[in-house]
Length: 98
Image (cartoon, rainbow, N blue to C red; front, side, top):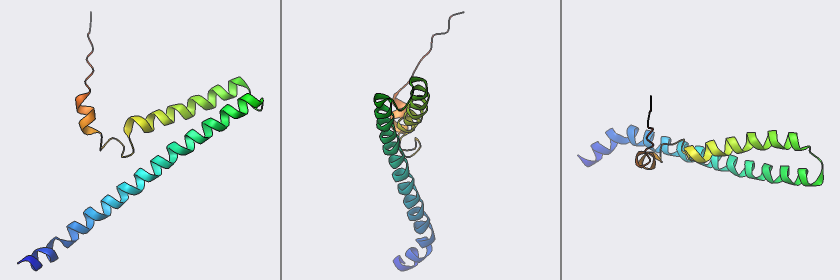
């Protein structure tokens, strides 16, 4: 029976393995994006200090990069799937006054 079970469950196990590999690849890509954003921020600061970039251009670029970095950190590398336990613990209540 054990061999028959293995044969019958192989397609499902293969799909689970495939989905895990896709998840790991996506996590690596998001982590790499966060690193590249941090590197770009360092370059922006250097350009501002050396006078290669105006204050207004710097502010606009910095805002875009920091917003994207915040999205990545908020949702985590798995898009929020791994952080469900953490999200359940954080409750925000709003008092509504009429």
